[in-house]
Amino acid sequence: MDEGKKKRKRKYLILLLVVLLVVSAIIIYVCIDKSNNPFIVQLSDEGMVITGYRGFSREVDIPDEIDSVYVTAIGDRAFADNKRITSISIPDSVTSIGEGVFSNCSSLEQVKLSSNIKEICNNTFLNCKNLEKGVLPDSVLTVGSMAFYGCSALKDIELPASIVSVGDYAFSECLSLELISLPEGMLSIGKGAFSRCYMLDSFTIPDGIQTICEDTFSECTSLKEIKLPDSVKVIEKNAFFNCKNLEYIDLSSVESVGILAFGYCFNLYEVTLSDSMVILEEKAFYCCKNLKELVLPNNNIVIKYRAFAHCYNLDME
Image (cartoon, rainbow, N blue to C red; front, side, top):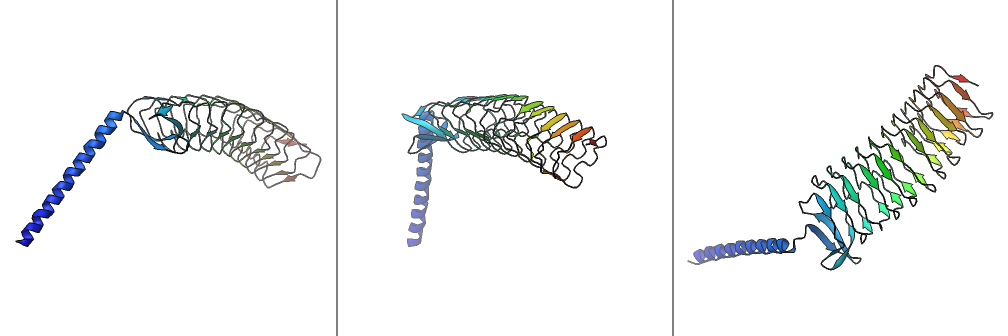
């Protein structure tokens, strides 16, 4: 008898628990539906932070306030992997956006950024394959690593005069990129920053940059002209690897050229070296088949093994 009562009591408790769960789910659903708020948010000391998006709209207009609290930030990967969104507008109340916020948003075509953000973080627009143009506000100081990596439709990007650094592979594999201008006063350009930008045909390095890092322009196969300021002293390995349409390079201020820095630059026919040149690393100009004239400086320059291997037409003086 006691055992039967225990079983019935257990069944009642289970039934009550199920009813409570159903009622709770209904209440949550009603609250969500009533709020009509497609954004997942979190309150911080600075204001409201958007941490996710559960809406279905293709055109997203982020409000400057949610529940009478200013929206001040967008958290890491808040909109990542969303395949529906085609455009998004971020209000000026937002002062920071996290890493990977729009990564893999493959339908995203247009973005209006807040005029008060200071950084485009790592992976922000990674693989946004339909993004065609980017305009960064005057407040932006840095573009993070892989920020626009794989934006294969991006043709034009406007960088403000405030920019001081571009991170590693920031614009790598922007296959359609034709035009980009870097402002004077920049401090650094990361490795691979413009690698495999196949449509880029000319580029001017701003004064103040001292190093062209590893892979910076590697496999920019349409690049014909590159202008280096006197501030550039070092060109690292693979910096212009397989820039097969590059015709001329003035290295009159450069002191060292890295391994395969100009490897497979088939159309390179003339190089100007500086009197302050210290070292040409292994295979620095490997397989530059059309290189015809090179005047070596009158100093004790170190020329490493096979620096000019397979430069069949080269006449060195």
